[in-house]
Image: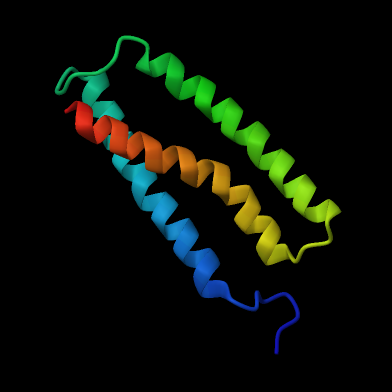
Length: 99
């Protein structure tokens, strides 16, 4: 078919869509916290910045490790998205409970 098309795009798209939805929830909850609409931990803005750096580092390491193992582009993208998805899922749960 198409050489660059992933063999199972639905799994990758689902992983990305779930992460995107959870990220939007986190953005909304953090914005509400910064505006004083809902309770927020005192250091939340600093946590937000620090976790982005950690997720980017972990993602780069995961994609490099996957590439070194000779995985397909689809598996490399899934490996790169996993650290972000893990954090958006945890943040949406944690921030959703705080309110």
